[in-house]
Image 1 (cartoon, rainbow, N blue to C red):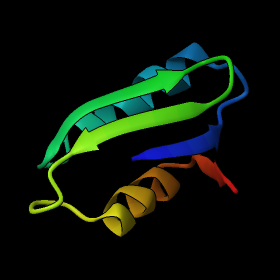
Image 2: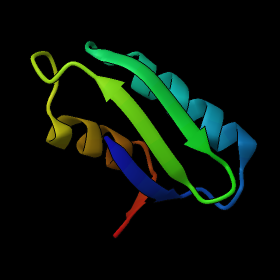
Image 3: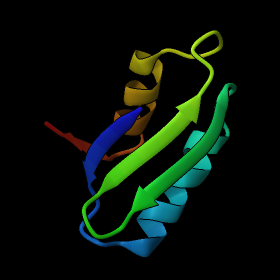
Image 4: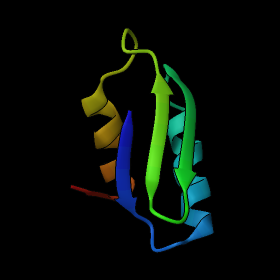
Length: 66
């Protein structure tokens, strides 16, 4: 799954987001590209839905870009 977020090149925010995502049951890997805000998430669809991941990102103050 790939989403784009507005992180304004903030390294601390990116590390926080990666940590939050990795704490979700079912997330195997979460990588954020600081240059373009691309977030690549590898997860088990049996344990977690796309909507739950997007909701978690939004709830933690990150704006998801279209």
